Length: 73
Image (tube, rainbow, N blue to C red):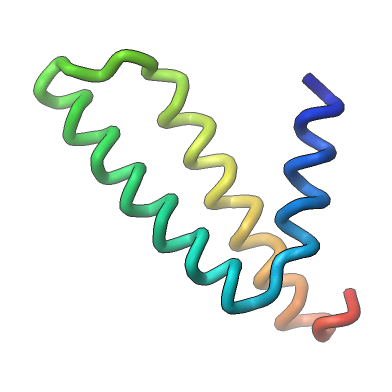
């Protein structure tokens, strides 16, 4: 599990700003769909919501870090 997490962090950190924006939009769209499925009781894996929210937070963290410290951080 820890290996998968560090791989995901490295993958997000390696993305360009444009790729981060695309991934962020896709994850927000997926989160919307998951929440809708949850409301109509059709959600198969409720833990997916938590995982998507964490990925969104990771992307926002990388974007904020780049804004504060520049692209080389």
